[in-house]
Image 1 (cartoon, rainbow over the protein chains, first blue to last red):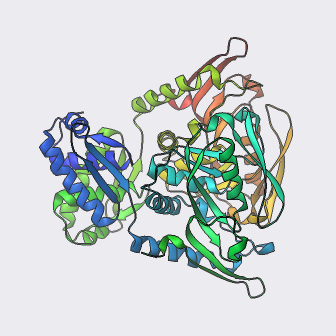
Image 2 (spheres, chains in turn yellow, blue):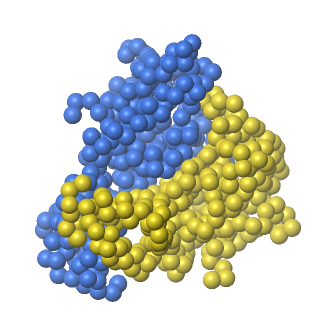
Length: 276
Length: 276
C-alpha cells in the first residue's frame, strides 16, 4: 500500500488489528505494510494499546524477539459488561416474554447484532486464556452466540444438528435425555466437522439441568475431543444443585424466579460477574 | 472520557465508527465525547474517510446541517471481493466435498468467522442502498451468513424454523415445495418476530430452484411484509432458467457443473460480480 502519514497509519493499523483478533502480526509485516521503521510502528502500537485498554476494547499483547509481534486480544471491562447485562436482565424480565410451560421468549434478543457482539466479547473475554481449537453449539438459538464468540476468539464453529442432514455427509449421532423435559432426543455431528483431540468450547443460549450440554459432551467423547470450556448466555436457577448435570461453566445471566401466576420474572447477572 | 491527543483520538474514533456501522453519529456527539472543537473532529473524519475508502473498508457519509453527522457504511472493493470469492470457489471445487445425491459439503466454510465476515461485507455492500428493516433466513446454514450481514447493515435477524418450537410462542406455519427435491416441507415463524409491513432482506446459503426462498416470500405475505432483496451465497446453475422460481437475487458464487462420475466440480463468481 502507499506510504501513509502517521495519522492515517494509526487509522489503518487500528482497523487492521480490530479485524484480526487473536492473530499474531509481526512487527516486520507491519513495517513492510506501511513502509515505516519498526521504531515508528512500535510507537503507534503503544498509542493504540493505551486507547484500547482505557476504553475497554481489549489488550495488545506484544511478543519480543525475532518471532515477535503483536496480538489483539478482545476483552471487556467488567464494569461496562455488568451495565450491559443488567440492561439485558431488565429486558428479559418483561412479563410478555413468559410462554406456556414457563419458557422465556428471548429469540428477539439473539437477533440483535449489537447485543450479540457484546455477548460474544464477554465470552471471548472469559475464555481468552484457554487453549481452544473450535467452538461448538447446537442448532438453532446458540448459533448467533457461538459465531459472535468465534469472531472475537478467531476460532471456527461447528454446529451440532438435531437431525442428520444429507448435506452433512456421514455423521455420528447420539441420544440424550433433555434434563428439563426428560424426553429422549437425538443430536448428530458430521464426521468431518471435528478432528480427533480437538479442544472444544461449548456455547449455548440456555441451560437448565444441562442435559443438552451433557449431550454435546458425550458427542465430543465419540470424536475423542476434549471440553475446554462451557459458556451459557442464561442459566436457570430454578433447579436443585444436585439435579444439575454440569458444574463447571460460565453464565452471563441467571433466571432466578418465574412466577406463572403473577407473571413475575427475575433475572440476575450470571457467575461471570462473581468473585471479581 | 478523558481528553485525548489527536493521535489517540483517531484510534478511538476509528474503533467507535467500525463498531457502529450504518449509525448516524452527530458531530456534536463526537465533539462532546472528545472535548474537541467540531473543526478538529471534521479534520479527523476526513483522515479516516480517506483511509477507509483507499483500503476498501467502506465509506463515511457526511450529512451537513443541524441534524448532520457521519455514518459509516461498510463496503467492499469489487476487485478485492472478487479475489476472495475466487479463493472460495477453488475451495468449493475440492472433489471430496461431493456428497451422495450430488450435494456439496460447505458447512465447514460457513463456520469460519473470517470468511463469514468477508461474505457479510459483500452482502452489506450489495444491499447498502436498499430500504431494509430486518434480515430473514431459515435455519440452519443461513444463520451465520444472515448474522454477518446484519452486523454490517446494523439490522436485526429473524430466523424461520423448520418446525414449531415451544420456546417461540404462537407462530405462523406454511407448507412449501422444495424445488429440487419436490418434497412438501413446513416452515414457521413466531408471530412476534416480525412487524406488519416490514421490509425484509432474505439471506440463504444455497439456492437451486428457489423453493425454500419462495417459501420465505410466501411466509412474508402472511405477515403483510415486503421483500426488499434476496441474497444467496451459492446458487446452482444446474437448472433450466424456466424452472427457477425466483429471478431477482444477488449471488456471490455459482455452482455451474457437478460431474458425479469424475467428481469434477466447477464454481464461478456469482451475479454480484457481473455488470460492473
